[in-house]
Image (cartoon, rainbow, N blue to C red; front, top):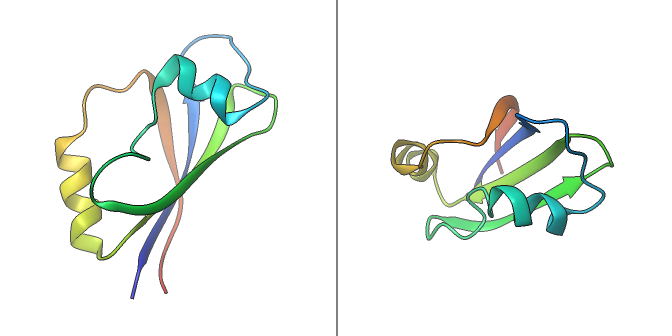
Length: 84
């Protein structure tokens, strides 16, 4: 089973992002490259907010990832979680 976490990430400035690449250039990969993440993506919609999906093998992997992340340059808001 996989554990999927979806959140919206909102920049702390007034910039907007037409693509995931633009967001990543400013804020980094936001966990997409973490060793515990088995799949993930960032979807931009032209605003200052993107939707990020991260898939882990287990819920515990998500908790470990959160505990080790650096200071954020954006605000993260929970959208949903599921076990597939």
